[in-house]
View 1 (cartoon, one colour):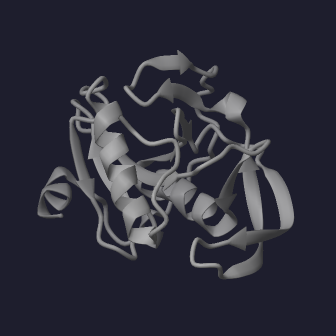
View 2 (cartoon, one colour):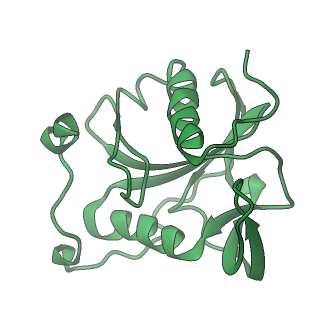
Length: 181
């Protein structure tokens, strides 16, 4: 049984995110056939590969409560979407709450709400002010923590423009790269 509140240590949040992802992935083995956590400091938390070789970059968050929309760092949003533009690695932003989780396909989250001057409070008491985007819960796949799908938004194909110069991203991520992690 998962507690109603997550632990307070940052590294515990990272480990909890991977643990919860694996739990949800049990129901979705074709989508998450291979899951590999990335090194600390990478701008996303894990790579996943589906049963046909499609690759996902996963950013995982564990949060104790929901607000009106789900915050994402602006630079993280842009960098994750760039993975699709330049390397065709599909970015997924997955947020786990004590009762459920939401998964955004960031290529579909085209109109985030801009939130200026958000005060972010870390668990250690440190607080700072920053700008954030807010993702709409209605654009996310909603699941319980056992991976049962509760809601799927309408998917729009081809909403991110194609770019001609893939050299901007340093190399492509392949099955061999994932296996090396």
